[in-house]
Length: 248
Image (cartoon, rainbow, N blue to C red; front, side, top):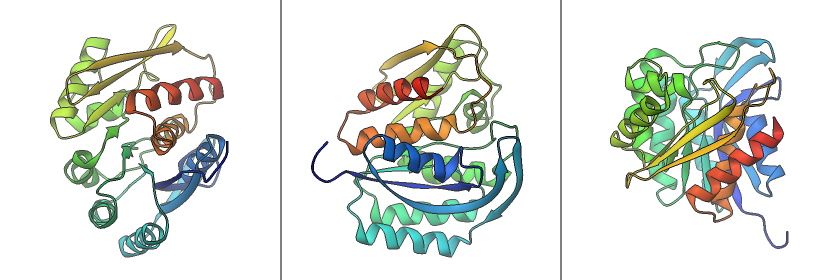
């Protein structure tokens, strides 16, 4: 690589264990040749076994971080992760209106950690759906997260997952990648649905491992890195899935 690296920003929570959140995002950006900056929305006492405590960053300080980063850096892409409170979501949405009108946004609607710990308040789900989902160029829910966003049961087959992706697009997202990591079978199958109705299916061998902490963060950060490099959305998603499969 030569020249100046593109810049991506992650707006997310900190994982003290280093496997997910801000830490996973910055590692992914660096591995993929992107300079990473960050806005921290929450601190977690967390390790590979679970989340022991969450300390939310005040919304006004989240806003100050956004203003500081975007007023100085020429940002090429943005990834949004853990937002645990409605007031923080509002601060982020307002910050995007000030600074990110033309920047590609990947929204990972983090709700439950791989360990099963809940990471978002109930009222924040509605705020996420109303304030941020319509601003996203891509949202990357897993099967349980898609169900929560829609108020439906978790999809049990590919047809239902694709139908839920289309309903999420109808809520305003420009594209939806429903991840298949919570599914079953020998293949891990993701479905990418874009606003024009196009469906792309991405599959990879399901890796037999329990070391999946931070996979959602890593995938969405890898997509943002691809967009920062100027890839099209389908190219960025395909490259991100390849990267994550290799990492697993």
